[in-house]
Image (cartoon, protein in one colour):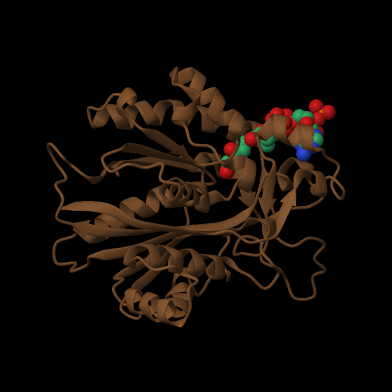
Length: 349
Ligand code: UT7
């Protein structure tokens, strides 16, 4: 039995906000943003669009890939996708920017949008490491004896541009909106030995002492909005950029060799490392320390900025649809971010 990703999808809001356009309203410029982060533009969800909308669109695209139809080809495709949604046993949404505070989960909203009536549904809150945690959770749910589950829809979905302080140039330039989805299935392929396939191992870690470095303080249980309170800003993310940067470079440099060694695999044999897209400089620093060729790490931050839990499944879908992944490729995904959390998955495509 193997736990394999059998299809991928993504949803990117059409509105593109370039650095130059952003610089008209914020005291920044394209040169600073590119040289300090690698970001060229980000996508911004329309005001009526929330995380569950992006998540459901990414999910439909993944379901369409699974059954071999074009998601936008009309009523027959819609009906086939709706039918395919009924094969889902679980829906997991990894998000830091859910539709609603407290309840319901964004996954329940996605279940309703897809009509996936057989599926259980829950969210994972693990910041930018949400997809890594989600893949291991999916594998656990599929492996448990008596679970009787075969197929999990795992989505990373974010509307981060709605949770930034647009007057803070050190954070507002960094984030973007989007969603990525994968369908994870329990298959008959071998998980051990020659020809092994699917998810082989994950590392999931957290350093809660660093929770202060990346935090959205207002609106929830610790600091709720009070009746009559005049709110100057909607809830926004505060970040100690330097602390998170140092943490990120350290954990990437430690975790990637660790997960490969645990599986007895040389990094030379890894086809691609798919890191969370937070800052190209973080990846360049880790690449140097690990003495790896730069193209071993996949980077698309120039187009999307940091989409938190969505960045890795968006990258996987880009690679997959672009024909850049071959069966048998060894991949490592690497996440790090709010919590602080970090982790990696090692899988054979
Ligand atoms: O996904 C979650 C994980 N998040 C991350 O991994 C982010 C980690 N941190 C980072 O990527 C970097 O720390 C940042 C990109 C956030 C900041 O880069 P930095 O090189 O550490 O810049 P800095 O904060 O040290 O600021 C340097 C200068 C400051 O000016 P002074 O004080 O030297 O005059 C800032 O005011 O750059 C200034 N600055 C800007 N200038 C133009 C900060 N933001 C901007 C901006 N445009 N957007």
